[in-house]
Image (cartoon, rainbow, N blue to C red; front, top):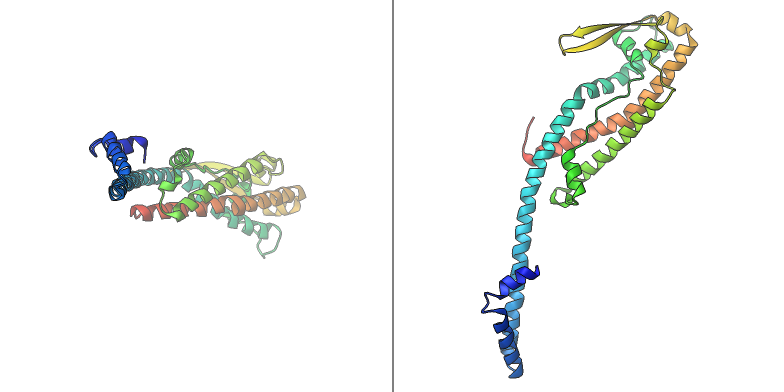
Length: 263
């Protein structure tokens, strides 16, 4: 209870100085019953004042929590919109890279690559993703008010999301700055031919690739480059993109549940 709150409580009680005078008179007269009563009244008043302050603070925190969760949900929707298309493509491409690897190194009995496998080989050095931060959470953490989030699973999930995003950012920075990973169509244009086109279904310019499998198998430099790309892409997905993606979806689900939202 603040000094101002205590003073505000004592003044209406016939005045603070009147209380002190009565208390001193009771002590001088050794009227211990009055002393005890006067002290009990003050103690009970202080206790009630503290309870009222706590109740007001809890009510304010609950209101602030709802405001924060609404803002957090808006941030999640925006981050999902910015990343969903590329995130889905990057996650799905790992399997196509693995399938293409089996064909390239003759681990399966095939004499050609599918268009998707050829595209996967061509984009095996693409590690980018727009993993946006959550400004509402960063603002709340900066003010030290994380505890207004009453659900411990949401608090924990948000911290883990920040950690997985940091790990993803570090992974992307490492992979994109390394000379070990090669954009294969530029390095080996005789093996991969790309043609751009506008995909009307998704409203996006895409590239269509054609691969010369026989020539690829005979070119050890190409195979080395693809192997490095495939290894890097696997690490990028398994250790960076996938953990962040799973944690992002988990936070979104928990916030939806807290707000009673269904998508």
